[in-house]
Image 1: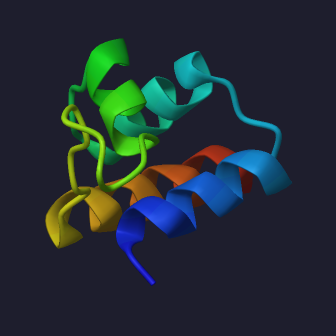
Image 2: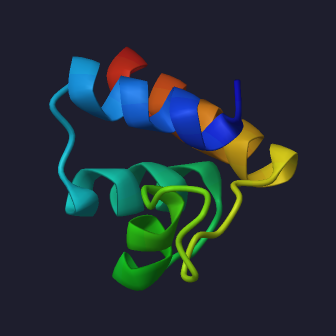
Image 3: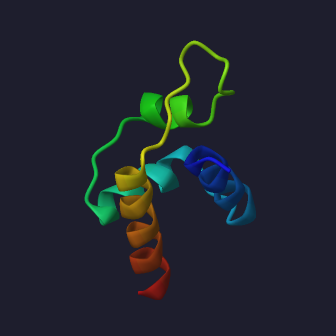
Length: 70
């Protein structure tokens, strides 16, 4: 399972909007744009698909933890 799939599943389970995902990344220490978020959720065969790397995934999970613990 790709990191993109994990974030997609978390998005549905937690009912997150794009702005929420951007906020979580910022809490984790990464600045991303709405277009990058959109690229993460595209199908892998789409020309604008962008794979979510391990470092960004770690930052996302750190931001998610901080957001929901506080």
